Length: 211
Image (tube, rainbow, N blue to C red; front, side, top):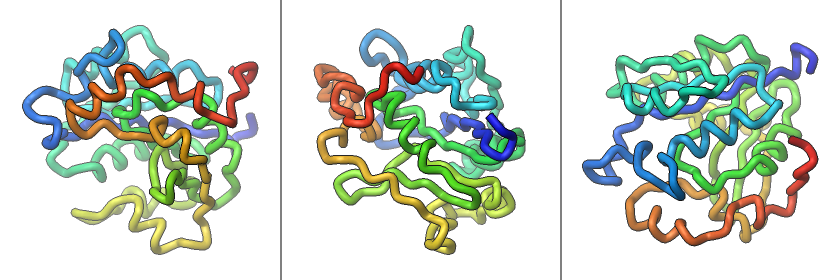
Protein backbone atom coordinates (compact mmCIF):
# COMPACT_ATOMS: atom_id res chain seq x y z
CA UNK A 1 0.00 0.00 0.00
CA UNK A 2 1.31 3.45 -0.91
CA UNK A 3 2.03 5.81 2.03
CA UNK A 4 -0.72 8.17 0.88
CA UNK A 5 -3.22 5.32 1.18
CA UNK A 6 -2.19 3.92 4.58
CA UNK A 7 -4.82 3.74 7.32
CA UNK A 8 -4.29 3.44 11.06
CA UNK A 9 -7.05 1.95 13.20
CA UNK A 10 -7.82 3.68 16.49
CA UNK A 11 -9.92 1.58 18.88
CA UNK A 12 -11.54 3.68 21.59
CA UNK A 13 -12.23 1.88 24.86
CA UNK A 14 -12.10 4.56 27.56
CA UNK A 15 -15.77 5.40 28.09
CA UNK A 16 -17.58 5.03 31.40
CA UNK A 17 -20.60 3.24 29.86
CA UNK A 18 -22.95 4.80 32.43
CA UNK A 19 -26.06 3.49 30.68
CA UNK A 20 -24.77 -0.07 31.01
CA UNK A 21 -24.82 -0.06 34.79
CA UNK A 22 -22.07 -0.88 37.27
CA UNK A 23 -20.38 -3.60 35.23
CA UNK A 24 -17.62 -2.67 32.79
CA UNK A 25 -19.35 -3.07 29.46
CA UNK A 26 -16.20 -3.91 27.52
CA UNK A 27 -15.40 -6.84 29.83
CA UNK A 28 -18.93 -8.27 29.70
CA UNK A 29 -19.04 -11.70 28.02
CA UNK A 30 -20.67 -12.00 24.61
CA UNK A 31 -20.53 -15.30 22.76
CA UNK A 32 -17.80 -16.62 24.98
CA UNK A 33 -15.42 -13.66 25.03
CA UNK A 34 -15.33 -10.11 26.45
CA UNK A 35 -17.22 -7.60 24.33
CA UNK A 36 -14.17 -5.51 23.36
CA UNK A 37 -12.22 -8.59 22.30
CA UNK A 38 -14.56 -9.01 19.31
CA UNK A 39 -13.46 -5.67 17.87
CA UNK A 40 -9.82 -6.30 18.70
CA UNK A 41 -9.84 -9.64 16.90
CA UNK A 42 -11.77 -8.30 13.92
CA UNK A 43 -9.45 -5.37 13.28
CA UNK A 44 -6.35 -7.48 13.91
CA UNK A 45 -7.51 -10.06 11.35
CA UNK A 46 -7.44 -7.52 8.52
CA UNK A 47 -4.45 -6.56 6.39
CA UNK A 48 -5.93 -3.15 5.74
CA UNK A 49 -4.26 -1.26 8.57
CA UNK A 50 -0.75 0.09 8.91
CA UNK A 51 -0.98 0.08 12.71
CA UNK A 52 -3.68 -0.59 15.31
CA UNK A 53 -3.95 1.55 18.45
CA UNK A 54 -6.07 0.51 21.43
CA UNK A 55 -6.83 3.45 23.73
CA UNK A 56 -8.18 2.50 27.15
CA UNK A 57 -8.12 3.62 30.77
CA UNK A 58 -8.62 0.27 32.53
CA UNK A 59 -5.84 -2.27 33.05
CA UNK A 60 -8.20 -5.24 32.71
CA UNK A 61 -9.40 -3.88 29.36
CA UNK A 62 -5.81 -3.30 28.22
CA UNK A 63 -5.17 -6.99 28.91
CA UNK A 64 -7.74 -7.94 26.27
CA UNK A 65 -5.20 -6.99 23.59
CA UNK A 66 -2.73 -9.67 24.68
CA UNK A 67 -1.47 -11.80 21.82
CA UNK A 68 -2.67 -9.38 19.14
CA UNK A 69 -0.64 -6.98 16.93
CA UNK A 70 -2.00 -3.98 18.78
CA UNK A 71 -0.32 -0.98 20.41
CA UNK A 72 -2.00 -0.21 23.74
CA UNK A 73 -2.21 3.48 24.68
CA UNK A 74 -3.17 4.15 28.31
CA UNK A 75 -5.67 6.96 28.76
CA UNK A 76 -4.99 8.74 32.04
CA UNK A 77 -7.76 11.28 31.53
CA UNK A 78 -10.91 9.36 30.58
CA UNK A 79 -13.04 12.04 32.21
CA UNK A 80 -12.15 14.24 29.24
CA UNK A 81 -14.47 12.09 27.15
CA UNK A 82 -14.12 10.75 23.64
CA UNK A 83 -11.96 13.63 22.54
CA UNK A 84 -9.08 12.44 24.74
CA UNK A 85 -9.12 8.97 23.18
CA UNK A 86 -9.14 10.61 19.76
CA UNK A 87 -6.27 12.91 20.69
CA UNK A 88 -4.13 10.06 22.00
CA UNK A 89 -4.77 7.87 18.99
CA UNK A 90 -4.17 10.60 16.43
CA UNK A 91 -0.99 11.75 18.20
CA UNK A 92 0.41 8.21 17.92
CA UNK A 93 -0.54 7.81 14.28
CA UNK A 94 1.44 8.67 11.17
CA UNK A 95 -1.16 7.28 8.79
CA UNK A 96 -2.76 9.11 5.89
CA UNK A 97 -6.16 8.14 7.32
CA UNK A 98 -7.54 7.31 10.76
CA UNK A 99 -10.39 4.83 11.23
CA UNK A 100 -12.10 5.18 14.59
CA UNK A 101 -13.74 2.12 16.13
CA UNK A 102 -15.85 1.90 19.28
CA UNK A 103 -15.40 -1.45 21.01
CA UNK A 104 -19.07 -2.24 21.55
CA UNK A 105 -20.14 -3.44 18.08
CA UNK A 106 -19.73 -7.22 18.38
CA UNK A 107 -21.58 -7.97 15.13
CA UNK A 108 -19.43 -5.68 13.01
CA UNK A 109 -17.75 -7.74 10.30
CA UNK A 110 -14.72 -7.47 8.04
CA UNK A 111 -16.65 -6.80 4.86
CA UNK A 112 -18.44 -3.79 6.32
CA UNK A 113 -15.06 -2.38 7.36
CA UNK A 114 -13.60 -3.03 3.91
CA UNK A 115 -16.51 -1.31 2.19
CA UNK A 116 -15.91 1.83 4.26
CA UNK A 117 -12.19 1.68 3.50
CA UNK A 118 -12.82 1.25 -0.22
CA UNK A 119 -14.64 4.60 -0.33
CA UNK A 120 -11.72 6.64 0.99
CA UNK A 121 -10.41 9.50 -1.12
CA UNK A 122 -7.84 12.24 -0.40
CA UNK A 123 -9.25 14.76 2.06
CA UNK A 124 -12.38 12.73 2.82
CA UNK A 125 -14.47 11.68 5.81
CA UNK A 126 -16.33 8.38 5.32
CA UNK A 127 -19.50 8.03 7.37
CA UNK A 128 -21.47 4.75 7.47
CA UNK A 129 -25.24 5.23 7.48
CA UNK A 130 -27.97 2.62 7.96
CA UNK A 131 -31.72 3.28 8.21
CA UNK A 132 -30.85 6.95 7.84
CA UNK A 133 -28.82 6.88 11.07
CA UNK A 134 -25.10 7.78 11.09
CA UNK A 135 -23.01 5.04 12.65
CA UNK A 136 -19.44 3.90 13.18
CA UNK A 137 -16.64 3.06 12.43
CA UNK A 138 -15.81 6.38 10.80
CA UNK A 139 -12.80 7.18 8.66
CA UNK A 140 -11.03 10.57 8.57
CA UNK A 141 -8.30 11.78 6.27
CA UNK A 142 -5.22 13.11 8.05
CA UNK A 143 -6.13 16.44 6.45
CA UNK A 144 -8.29 16.83 9.57
CA UNK A 145 -5.49 15.95 11.99
CA UNK A 146 -5.28 19.40 13.56
CA UNK A 147 -9.04 19.59 14.07
CA UNK A 148 -9.15 16.13 15.62
CA UNK A 149 -6.35 17.09 17.99
CA UNK A 150 -8.00 20.34 19.01
CA UNK A 151 -11.57 19.29 19.75
CA UNK A 152 -12.94 21.54 22.49
CA UNK A 153 -14.68 20.17 25.61
CA UNK A 154 -18.03 18.79 24.54
CA UNK A 155 -17.07 18.57 20.86
CA UNK A 156 -17.14 15.35 18.85
CA UNK A 157 -15.92 14.29 15.40
CA UNK A 158 -19.44 14.95 14.12
CA UNK A 159 -18.75 18.64 14.64
CA UNK A 160 -15.91 18.36 12.13
CA UNK A 161 -18.31 16.69 9.68
CA UNK A 162 -20.73 19.59 10.08
CA UNK A 163 -17.95 22.07 9.35
CA UNK A 164 -16.86 20.19 6.23
CA UNK A 165 -19.97 18.70 4.57
CA UNK A 166 -18.21 18.76 1.21
CA UNK A 167 -15.68 16.20 2.50
CA UNK A 168 -18.22 13.67 3.78
CA UNK A 169 -18.71 10.47 1.77
CA UNK A 170 -21.70 8.41 2.89
CA UNK A 171 -21.25 4.66 3.07
CA UNK A 172 -24.90 3.64 2.79
CA UNK A 173 -25.80 0.19 4.08
CA UNK A 174 -29.12 -1.64 3.64
CA UNK A 175 -31.50 -1.94 6.57
CA UNK A 176 -30.89 -5.67 6.89
CA UNK A 177 -27.39 -5.18 8.30
CA UNK A 178 -28.46 -2.63 10.91
CA UNK A 179 -27.46 -4.97 13.74
CA UNK A 180 -23.90 -5.16 12.37
CA UNK A 181 -23.57 -1.44 13.08
CA UNK A 182 -25.39 -1.55 16.42
CA UNK A 183 -23.65 -0.25 19.52
CA UNK A 184 -24.34 -2.03 22.81
CA UNK A 185 -25.68 0.52 25.27
CA UNK A 186 -27.32 -1.69 27.89
CA UNK A 187 -27.28 -5.30 29.13
CA UNK A 188 -30.76 -5.98 27.75
CA UNK A 189 -29.67 -5.19 24.20
CA UNK A 190 -26.59 -7.37 24.62
CA UNK A 191 -28.80 -10.28 25.63
CA UNK A 192 -31.09 -9.71 22.65
CA UNK A 193 -28.15 -9.83 20.24
CA UNK A 194 -26.78 -13.15 21.56
CA UNK A 195 -28.86 -15.36 19.25
CA UNK A 196 -28.58 -13.11 16.20
CA UNK A 197 -26.55 -14.50 13.31
CA UNK A 198 -23.20 -12.84 12.66
CA UNK A 199 -23.20 -9.57 10.74
CA UNK A 200 -21.25 -10.97 7.79
CA UNK A 201 -24.14 -13.34 7.07
CA UNK A 202 -26.35 -10.29 6.61
CA UNK A 203 -23.86 -8.30 4.60
CA UNK A 204 -24.33 -7.88 0.82
CA UNK A 205 -20.73 -6.66 0.52
CA UNK A 206 -19.34 -10.00 1.74
CA UNK A 207 -16.13 -10.95 -0.09
CA UNK A 208 -14.65 -13.57 2.16
CA UNK A 209 -11.72 -14.24 -0.16
CA UNK A 210 -10.38 -10.74 0.57
CA UNK A 211 -8.97 -11.50 4.02
